[in-house]
Image 1 (spheres, rainbow, N blue to C red):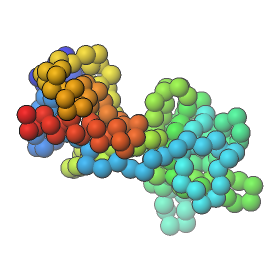
Image 2 (cartoon, helix red, strand yellow; image 1 turned 60 degrees about the vertical axis):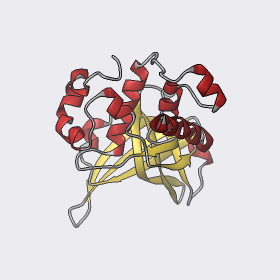
Image 3 (cartoon, rainbow, N blue to C red; image 1 turned 90 degrees about the vertical axis):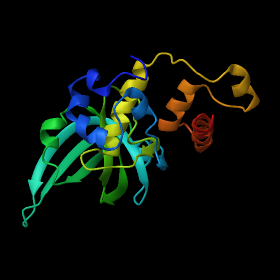
Image 4 (cartoon, helix red, strand yellow; image 1 turned 180 degrees about the horizontal axis):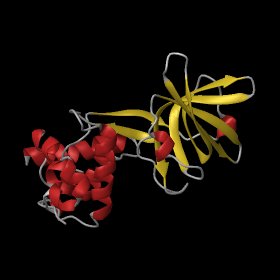
Length: 221
């Protein structure tokens, strides 16, 4: 795979979105990787469930122990998923997302961001975003750190873009950098592959700024 590879050749997930991607000018791997975030969501920090306080907006992670789907008198559905870590448990609340009953299973490791509330001794969270991780060592790209937000169009969410870009970056072991080393050194610029990784998944605002500086330099160059 290189920058000129058509996205449609990477599998059914991309083929299903091909027409939508083309509408925003995304056809190749290069187009997709250079479709950069216009801002980043707040720097979310993972907290142990037992350390969370009512009123906080945080990220918690834990193993799913129970899943329930209930209905209000007005017919609205509420999904309640309980997760626990080594410090306690918390009930995650979702509204009108019945598909979760078939998507999330007992034993899954879940990462969720939202506002913590407390009812008596029971902690709850109104979930803003979530993701199922392969293990507790897996990277959470939607619920921790600086979360990239992209220009969105119908049927093309930031969450979908984040997941697919991470897949491509994980596949790109190396990338030919067309800028000469002396120019990068003189202008204190990152390598291209590092800039692409950092613009999409920065560890800090400073790293994101350095990545944007490199990509902006390329446009002028």
